[in-house]
Structure formats: structure tokens, C-alpha cells
Image 1: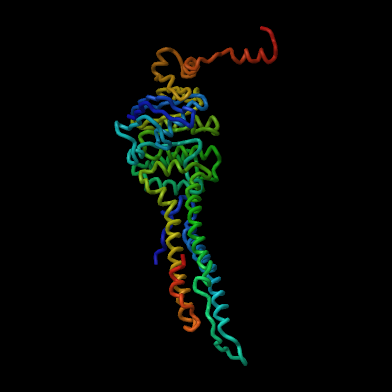
Image 2: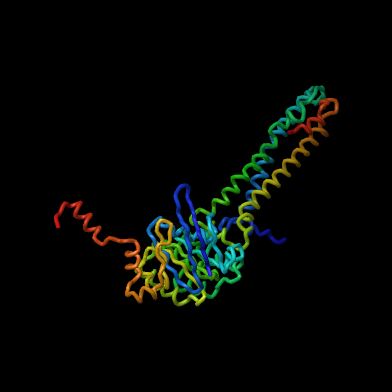
Length: 165
Length: 244
């Protein structure tokens, strides 16, 4: 498979590796922070059971709402999205480091070059991290919904999904 | 033809350019002179559309839009190259951006100044960086080449080489606008001198006119600026308290 050429969407002189690196770092941050939810859910789920004579027995009870468990579980994605703002600024400022290459960029007949090189990765990153947040949100809810015994689900669990914001 | 009509530029309260009218035709080599803060750099940046201004600047009677902008190139002492790129990478980028890129000229100048093609420009010495900056401006394929103190930091031999090379390679339709303090050095190289003072054009003369008057550009500048030749000796007398 042909490797994607990032050089056209990054400021000239910035390593091509930075494109995938930004995306991978943001995605990893989103996943790692989402582990908060998994740990909280695992703990709340465990509270529904007791160990009796080496056997796990369902004792009932109501699990906290999805929203309570998710809490800041998507903050990694939101932070990664926010980080795209300073990244765009960094790319723009890179045209002032060591020279004023901004003069050349602003003189190019193709007026979209500067915008494309400063904004593509941040916009792509923001879109990817938003998508990641949506997928994690759905997966987290599916986990909550499928694995929690029905009797332990709070009556408002569907509402909790949509009251995320 | 590059025409500036009533060009004004303010930096806050300070007027950097004041009603500048200037017409520069094809093939001219114009020296832009003036003390620090006279408005030379500001004038160039206005022509290149790098800073907003009042007044009208046209190229062949039409406003300088993106398409026409490619007919202007710029070499500045601030440098406008990409420091992390090699000259080879610059060449490829410019070839992609400027269809009129002069590859032959680029190669010839790189060889003449013995600049390495494969090293990042940031590793060059100041003199080499200046040379490379000018090489890119000359190779872009522009009709109007604007240079703002391009040789600041270069030694005299280097600069002389450059003037010779420039005169040798420029085509009759190529126009150079060169802002510099090195009046005497460029006097044999320019065809016209424009003097700026306090953001205004205070002098505009062709070297032919000067030749006819038996003057050189330095005399002309001194005359226009009302230079007082005895000011140094006066100041020294006052400082040392010596009598005449």
C-alpha cells in the first residue's frame, strides 16, 4: 500500500512524521483517559456481586447512572481536540522561526498553501478526536447496557446517555 | 510597469509612508536609499502586499493579485527561505509553485557560490544564507526583483561578486529594486536612485542625469539630505573644547 504523503499538509521543514504522530498521540490520550470509565464501571459492576464460598453471587442494587460513571472519561478526546488550536498556532508561528518564511508563503500564487499547511492536521485531528469521542461514548454505553443486569439499571439509563452534555 | 500612487502607511500614530508616487519600468535597476526608518522596507512590503496600506499599487495597470504576485520576488535580510529545507527541496517547492522558475540560473548560481545542495539552509553561515536568499529571488522567474538589504553580513568580496553576477545574468526586462545603505558599492550597478526620507520620496534621479551633472550618487544623496560636511569636526571641537 502506498504511504500517505503528509508533506503537502504540513509547514515546509516540519518532519512528515509529525502528521501521524499528532493523530496517534491524540487517539492514545483519548483511549487512556477513557480507562477512567472502564475502571469506574468495573468497580460499580463488582459492587453488584458478592463472593460467597468462592462463588460470585448477584446481590442486586442499582448501578450509578451512565453519566455518573462516564464522568470525565471523554476528557482525553476533548483535550486532544482543544490541543489542535495551539497546534495550528505552532504551525503558523513556525514560519517565523529561523527566518521569515511567512513572506514566501504569503507571496505564493496558490493562496491556499499557507492555510492548508497550518490547518489541515489540526482540523483533521479535531475531527478524528471528535469521532473517537463519539465511538467511545457509544462503546462505553453499550458496555454499560449489555453487561449490567437489567434489574440493576437505573430507570433513567437511556436518558443518561443523551444527557451527556 | 510598477506604479505606486499616493501610497500611505501608518504604524499607529507614526506615518511610515507619506503619499508615495513612484513608477518603475521594466529593465530598471533602482537603488532605494534612505536612513534607517525612512520607509524603504515598508515600501517594499506594501508592494508585495505583506502589509495593508492606503493608495494604489498596480502592475501593468492592474492591482497585484495572487496571479500577478508571482511576477514579484523578494530577498530580505530577514530571510524568507525555509531554514529546515535544503536548497534542493527549495528548488522543488519553487518549481511547483512558480512555473517560470529559472532552474538553469538556480543551478549556475548555486555552483558559483559553492553552496551545498543537500544541507539544510539553517546550517549555512550568515553570508551563505544571504547568498541563498538572493539566489531564490533571482531564480523565481519574477519580472520585478525586490531586495531589502540583501547583503547585510556579507564581506566586500562577496558583495562585489554578487554585483558582477547580477549584471551578467539579468535579462533586459528584469527589474531590480535594491534597498541598501551601501551607496558607493551599488553606484556603478544601478540605473536610478530613489531617496526616501520620513516616508516621502525626496529624490529620484537616473545615473545618466548624474553623469551629465558630473555627480555621483553619494554626492546626490548628501545634497538631497542637506548633509553638513563639517558637522563631525564641529561636534569634536565642542567635545574636546579645542579652538579653531
